[in-house]
Length: 135
Image (cartoon, rainbow, N blue to C red):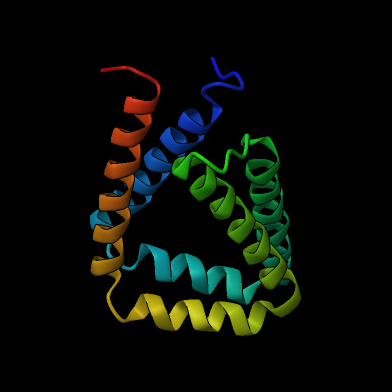
């Protein structure tokens, strides 16, 4: 259960699980990410919902994570929450431009991005488990 002492660890753990899952999904079904991106680009309603959800998740992470200037993980998680919030704003305000840029980045090496996501996810899970004193 999360509390003020370990919330950064829990957020890091769940972000790591997300990254591993997303990367694994792309490896299992190559082109999954680009297909999903095309669907979001094609629908204003999906763009709107994606933007709102991304803003909500980013703001929640940003506000809930206890910021501690002496703790690098706390700083990193706060920054990630802020970036997610800004990403949601970009999707809502400039969805066509932002999603086109994202599509260009993904098309140039989805396996590389998937591998990067998995690697970051594994690192995040290990760091989180150490923070939560699981081992």
